[in-house]
Amino acid sequence: MPNIKSAKKRVLVNEKKTEQNKAIRSAVKTEMKKVDALIKEGKLEEAKAALSVAFSAIDSACSKNIYHANNAANKKAKLAKRVDAMAKVAVVEEVAPVEAAPVVEETPAEAPAKKTTTRKPRAKKADAE
Image (tube, rainbow, N blue to C red; front, side, top):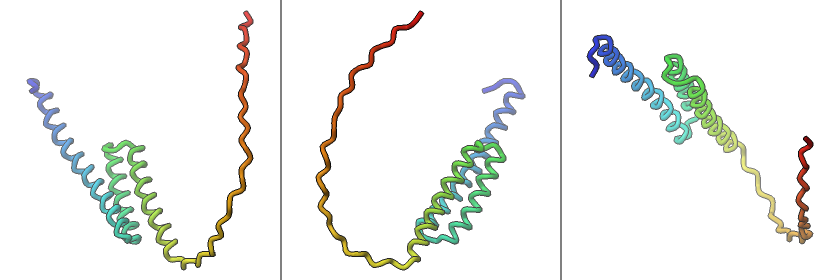
């Protein structure tokens, strides 16, 4: 335990800031989990709306130096990638399925034997000094 008054204050301030930072990190994680839950449920529009809320929370944490800028960008990119993948799946499901053509089995032609060549080791060059 510190003896100097300013050191005692720093301990108290650090504890307070740690709690604040922890709450902000928790809020960011909660927003990210909401987006993931909506993706799993297949709710595209709600996921996009939650994505913007999550982006806002991540940007806010980044501006307060709780997350490094690259870490925040990485989190945003991963979330956006998941939502985009879900959107692509939704688009594919909306397209009417095409009837599959009958499968014709082809017998593979015999592949020519592979040539194996052995290389001679290169002669080492003598250093010209």
